Amino acid sequence: LGLCFMGDTVHTKIKPDPSSQLLSTAAFRLMKMRDAGEASNHPLNQKAGEGFVWRWLPYVPGGPPLKASGEFSVPIDAGEVEAILNAAEAGKPVPVFTHEGSGTATAGSKAAPVLETFAKKKEAANAFFKAGEFVKAIAAYDAALNVKPLPSDAEAAIAHANAAQAMLNLAASEEDETRRQGCAAEALRRGNRAGELDPTYAKAHARCAAACDILGEVQAAAEFRSRAEACGAAAEQKRETASSSASSSSSTVAPPSVAAH
View 1 (tube, rainbow, N blue to C red):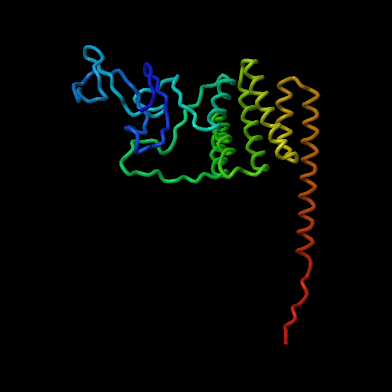
View 2: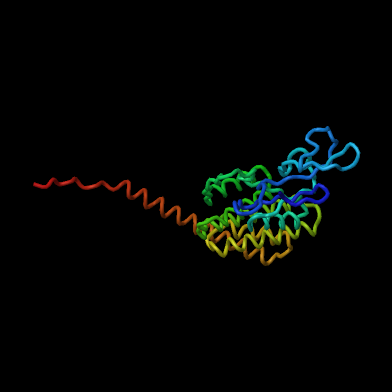
């Protein structure tokens, strides 16, 4: 049903098992409420003193009947774990995740398979990024990196570089210098990973340079910036070559066809 202590609920996602004694895959919150006298003998309602009752109610993270600032959810994949650690390191509120498919199990019910693709996950992460929800964006980028089949190195580099930029944005809004440095260090790690996956990706090196600026690593920042400029110049040269080739191909007149007799 979920774990509860003093009203704090651990939101779990439990795999249905017909052979077990599982009552429900939904999480519940234990609330102390005024006893309205209704269904007082229900197993989910227990007397909690004169005029009050302990009542188990379906739990939705961040939702009614109580929105608590300290609530949290149990991470179910590496992306959620990393998002929680990033938030804690940055001194930001720990994100609470909801998972589609949580609900009361019914006899013979089967969960419909959900096919997640890297592109869909990255698109969701980009939406969080544009909305300024940088912690959630990082979690979503990490979720995209863990889809099966795994993304290509070039795709993974983009996700890591975007996560690095999200960390840089968190650093820019951080007033505490220690937390700001922590955000920058994580941005450097993610940007460096992006550069390892795709050494030609200019943005990966540029974000490493920005992180080094915050960390006071002047020489390293200059080196990363030099790499970014070199990658940008190479990419521009490649585009110009491709454009020139396409232009010359379109100007070539094809010879008339000869019919077979």
